[in-house]
Image 1 (cartoon, rainbow, N blue to C red):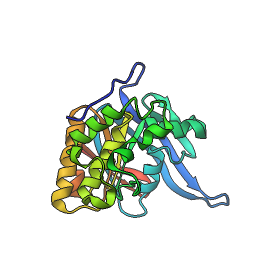
Image 2 (cartoon, rainbow, N blue to C red):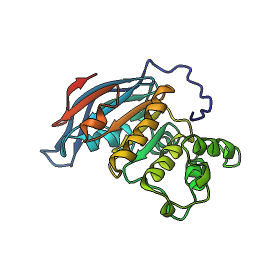
Image 3 (spheres, rainbow, N blue to C red):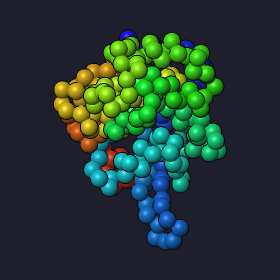
Image 4 (cartoon, rainbow, N blue to C red):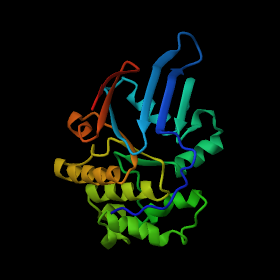
Length: 238
């Protein structure tokens, strides 16, 4: 089981994620490009949600907003009860590091670092020192089956192992939300299933997960699926 650090959740709303009237425009000259056109979406504590959509649907823009990599032109984004769309750049950086765990299709590991060092990277930008949480990092890697790979570099790992390192790294600050962008996109079907089983375990522990995927079979692993089309949520299925 993946270990957890205690987190004070006092004051959190029942929704872990709440998007209210989200619009996103690009460009300064009229007519501006209107990418998101009034998104309303609620994700509960411990819910596993998948978002699907074709290229050009607004899926990537929505992902960037959820990950606090961008801010909406209009509307509010509440994460854990706080309106993060009103935060400063410095505060958004802290939220990305401590409150959101990112799992990328391309893993985004640093090739010069070992497995253990890659998992410790978020600690370089937070309030906890590496020495304070070294045992915790080792425990996370043990829980994802990589205790025997601590000193290996990414080039010495399989794709599935690299994704497990990425998942372990996403957990190091015990985030409020796990945001997975095509987490099985670079994996074969067997290895992809193993990664999804690990995400199922994380969901079973009560973690909130939003997964972006183009694969409908992968999306069905979540407890709820939404489809975005032309900048709007068009369909919800459980």
